[in-house]
Length: 497
Ligand SMILES: [Zn+2]
Image (tube, rainbow, N blue to C red; front, side, top):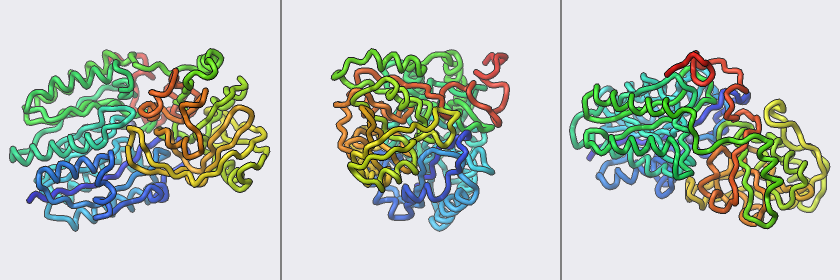
């Protein structure tokens, strides 16, 4: 019986966020070790579940190590990284001898001392298992992958949906590469191609039926029809890491010759380069958002404004007020902002209790220059909640999360969910716990880049993603880049692909 290690250590880092991501943030999500990992991942839409599915079908013995995940945020500090990685590696040592390793990673973790953190994780794993045990990794398409990383593993594959709804499927795809490796009795090769670009493949968008990323998937599938090509990982990259390894790449895993794999990887990246200016979703300005607010017919299905520039799921603070201000300036009725991440306002509202009225300033504290400063008004506390929710939509279906003690407050026609931690919006349940039926609102501001699309797009009259100026703004010229290699597109005009 093949002995297969599974593990997960994921974080998406935003190099412009001034706050560190610490052990505490991972612990809040639950670090699951050993058998605890097996019970947690039994039937959820996440990558290790897909690993376990294949292990069951193939009759492997699963050696669970550890799973750790924290919401996107600033860089992980060294001590927290060493703590978690240390536990993962210690469990790997204890699990020897092994026949294979399956790791669920993000690909955009930045650690103070390790700008390419996933490479460090994989190298330490390699030291434990030696050169003869294949290592396969699943990734988020918002990953920055180095050539060194591609050399260290036998194969990799990223999600093919954004918002990400194919986590379990991706885990399964990763594990299927291992199964094929066992069958053939020989290692595949993983070859990576890159271009000097900050972002590519249209940020992996798939919520429309068209666009560069969907075309890239079709192209990849045409190559994957060859049985000697296992998987192509289409990596869109994540620019907000502001790290030395950055931008899109394509990783081709297969048993074909290295020259053939390289040729395919280069073709994928040529496509990426050629279509670099194309997007399936234009991010709109605040002025255009204002126009849409004025054009909305009351009682129609909701106008959804995605706060693309201040998305906690992209590592932003989530306390930007540009869109809240826009709603209030327009005297919007039946409007909801979800959520505003402001621990102090949340504490005051929760303490005041339901029905209380208080004059406070909310939001805009972390970095008022990016995305709007505090908004002061008279707020009535409509609902206080423990903040716990279970995702019922297509994203992470069945998983649970919490805003922590939180409150719904109202000023005029605008209601705001204030929360004490940093959570993005993915699922309508996150509103229903406050007594709000999302489809019955007129205006919804959601702190999200695209994660909300899976569950919210079907109920909207219009979805607009707005550059509110926060630290997940799509405009690269708003940022003071410190670590990215130059020249790079689109910052430097001399880049010609
Ligand atoms: Zn992602």
